[in-house]
Structures are given as C-alpha cells and as structure tokens.
Image 1 (cartoon, rainbow, N blue to C red):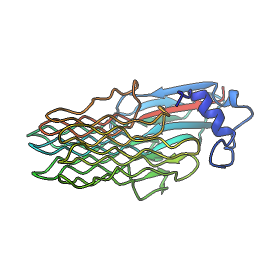
Image 2: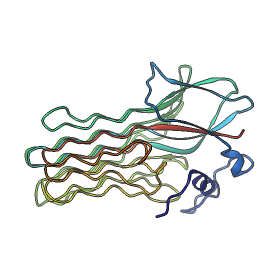
Image 3: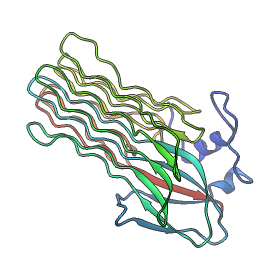
Length: 302
C-alpha cells in the first residue's frame, strides 16, 4: 500500500472517502483547514505539561493524536511474551477554543518492555489536552502484554479503553489482546480496533505469545479509509506477540515483530515508525520492547 501523506489523508476524510461515510464538516477549503500545524511528541505529565497558546483569531482547531502503547511482555525459558496494546487515536477531531487561551498538552509515554527474569512490562500513558483543570480531550493508553508462563505464552494487552471529550467518555470497551497459548494450540490475533465516531478510533489489541513455533500478530485499527493490519508474527521457536497499532500517522499499519527463539522483540522508534504502537513480546528468554509514546498534532486555519 502506498504511503499517504497527512494532507492526502485529511482531504480524503473531508471528502468522506471509503466505507460510504459522510464527509466531515470543515471550514472553507481543505487547504485552509490545514494551513498551520503544531506537533507535540515529547512525553510530558499533568504536573509538568507542555503549554500551547491559541493563536489570535482562532476559535476552532482540529486534533490528530494517540495515547501511548503498552509495553510487550518478556519471554520465559520456553515461552514468548504477549504484545502490548496500542493507544486510542483520533483524526481531525474538532475542538472549540478561545483565542489567547493556554492549553496544557500531556503526551503519554510508552509502557516499558518486560525484562527476562526481571521487571514486568508497563502500561502506556494517556494523552490529554486540558484547559485549566478541565479535560478537553483524553486518549487512553494501551495495556501491557504479560510475560510468558512456564508452559503458556503471555497474553497481549488490550488497547486503550476509553477516549473522552470533557467528562463524556466515548468508549468504555477496549480491543482485546490475544490470549497466550501452549504448544500445539492455535493462538488468536489481537482484536482489531473499531471506529467509535468518525474521528475517534480504538487501537488494536496486542498479539499472543506462545510456546509453539510463533507468536501472533496484534490487531490493527479500523477507520473510514482503510483497515490497518497488525505486525508480523515471529517465526522459529517460542515467539512473542506483535504489538497492536493505531492507524495514525503511519497508515500502512504495522506493529513490531515478536522475538524469535532466544531473542528480544523488534524495537520500534517513535516518529520513524509511528506513535502509540504497542511494544512486542520477547521470544523465549528474550525481553519485550517498550510501547511507543503518544502524540498530539493541532491543525488550524491561519
């Protein structure tokens, strides 16, 4: 599948492309709607947020963003770890703002990968936009994959469980991760995410680890343009599950490959590979990898 640029993707959304979904209502022309962009890709916290001041004359912004991915579980002596779930995403989400007001941007950090014989994996953190004490947007982070057991692979983490505008949450369910299995049992992929609204997307669940020949892929996310696929499964030995993946900004889907026998999983790089992806589970005796951090991208008409 050819790579789609942010501009092409935005124009396709505005035209209501794919799946028979009606066009989003955006101001004036497509060119005007994306004339100015601010992107935030540095992890931050509620206690120490990133500040962004709404430009003069701007009363409506559009947001692309994602919660962070959960870390992949570590493998054990003869089993692979489960992949982490991806964060909730949003595409061209409209928010009403006031010129000159300051918004607080909290970019969720990815969950740590599990360590063979050591620390368990961690969950991805939520990505938020706040105005004072009020939450304008919340995008949940993905759950971590579990470590492999003595005879059964680790289970994949669920995708971020909720997204909210203000105090209204749009989703209370998450795409489930695949359940770890023993040898000679068919493992399930992580569940594919789904569209909650025409702008809010569920991430994919992480893939299952296994004691058989390979781990299973994580689920992708569905949207009105395409359905992204999960990452490839590891081959050879007890593979770790691939992480789930949200659809934006890498529209071709993905998720790292789980670790092979005796190996650690593929390590993705935020920005280069995407944002909000779940980490992959390690192969037997291998470490899991960290989930990718979330991001916020604000677009407005200058």
